[in-house]
Length: 166
Image (cartoon, rainbow, N blue to C red; front, side):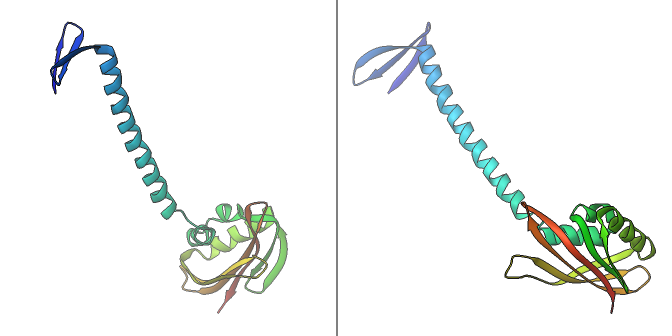
């Protein structure tokens, strides 16, 4: 096939027959083909980025562990329900969300976290999830830390948090 553009007309020869096509129509066809290829590439890239992002998304265990590891009582409190069953060493009580945040903030100010590692996690038949870990502080103390939460209204709610000496 031989293609030649002259004076706004496209002459195409095929099997010794000539036909005249409007150049705009030809350009439209080319533009559509290029657009489709770009859309395919864009969609493929978006799907790849979505899959990549999901593979690095933190689960709730990791998010709570990160808040404990960084000593961030405010971030940790985002998982509290209206009340929290909180145990710090031998001090055990049920606190409101604001009270629990303040007690934990005080605990972290006296026992700055050096590291926190989850050593076990699981779930109950009812769907409540729990984790047990070790919190090592800058003072060298190690606290056995456990927490459990349930999913309520599509949100993970911390029900109990314990920091106990080993």
